Length: 577
Image 1 (cartoon, helix red, strand yellow):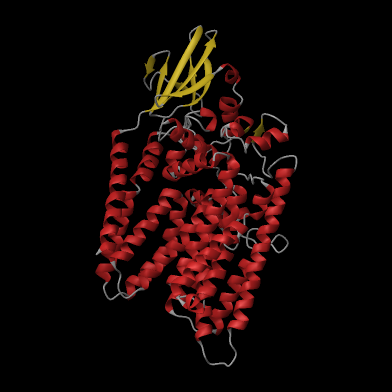
Image 2 (cartoon, rainbow, N blue to C red):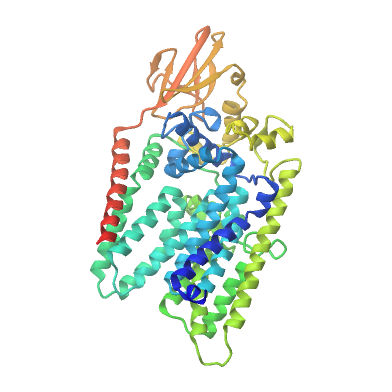
């Protein structure tokens, strides 16, 4: 047994098994109570995944418009928001067969992947296994990662990508930059773009200081620059299916931006001692304090210094110290970040690496007779217990919402079609995946095509009410029959011949057929948020909508698929050599 445990590969395997078990145990409250956690973003993202799942199930694939989700309104969402990852989650949803099973699986998945990627980052930077294991599980239990579990905050999927980004960044500091490093950088950045575009911004912020420092001190600047440039090109090719639709749809339509946060400082990091499971918790605070003290009293190598400086820089940006409101007044486009507190996540990834490096330096210092492990390991273990306890406390708090009278804590802009709580709860455990969306709807204006560009940036324009009247509570809804056939969304109703606002959103390339007649763009009439207005005939009427994607889009999609194939082939050949 001792021989087995002494083997380094066996230690790695056991560590991954412990991470696997810990990832399950962190979901224990949900497993034992069979509850769901429904946060402020669940309706938006679960609609996305439901739409993707039904497309796969029925074989009616439509890359752009929503034919099943978002009240079957034809809105463009997934094409602008990690399309391939949406289809992957749709597949997970089909396999899971209920929202409860899907949520439990996805919560486990983000926990396991986050812990595993952090473990890999630390091991690759020569941090000993016990420290790597404790920090990895601790990291995965933080609220900033588990916000996907509790709030369905999609940006937190970046929690498993950012440790890989930091690992790619540390490779810039090596004496020689290899093709293997090139491939890893391209893969990580491609993964970030395919999943969550804003994570790419954080990734670039991390990469820049490491690249600049590595380039200035490199003995082979030309190789480093060329390999990084090639990695960037490879990333562009492999993500053409993401960035091109984003450009095309935005250039051809005036889209409402995701919810604009005008007072960004309200969403900056603050220390919360009374609710340590949220925001800048006590355990996270101790990470920064610990590294601050280590920076003063111990020697730091170049990697540790650069990691520490970058981490504290990001931490400052995430906090109320930075004048976000003044900056966004001068540069409104910066408001795309929405919540400055999001910058705490990359700061924490970096501070964990920095503190781990400091601990390695301290443990390697043989200048004292005291075995420093008997001090460091108990402190780490206590921090781990504190973090896990915070997670469990919050899990139980959110459980009370599910058992209570509102099911979830954030009901702003939410519209319930029934007040029967048991029916609402059961809808999430039913095999009919669309059941929750018939009972619960939410006003949301993301990516609606407004008639005038100025409306998209007008503080006085209130699209939520327009969206509610156009789609959610449109009187025509009770008369409509909707179905999806041959990649088209088909709606039928009887009319007395009066002009009618239909719950369909029309974009520049949306193909509209009314009673067999194809309308060109000049004939299509819409309201301020793109709602279709038609002049029906008396009696039966049918409207069909689809999306006529450009030839360039299909070309870009082909380039993306081909690039992935060539990249995978290159890696296979490289490994077999």
